[in-house]
Image (cartoon, rainbow, N blue to C red):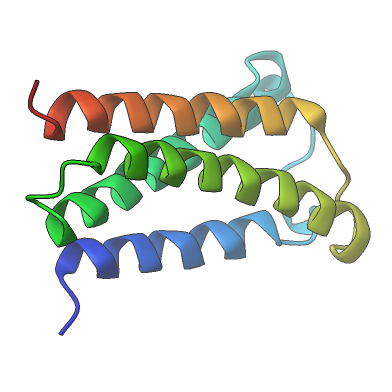
Length: 125
């Protein structure tokens, strides 16, 4: 049976995929949210949580493994790669959506923050 940490990352991955592939016509139009870069903060949040949940699942599966830091870093890099891939998916396959390098930067920032937080929380020095 899957541990709840594994179920959490699977569920979050599905939620992120759905949100990132919504057609542009379903998203709010540019207004005050654009002024505070709400879209970028949402990307930081989504990918920060994704990296944290991936690291949590790794920690629960491999509690006694001495290479957890390496696995956490790989998980963070995979989250960044997923963000890049999703930008291309938006550009080529999602109506009214486009490629945004700023979103990739926000995804990377979130992934790094989630990974660093996980390393500090779960890995004993």
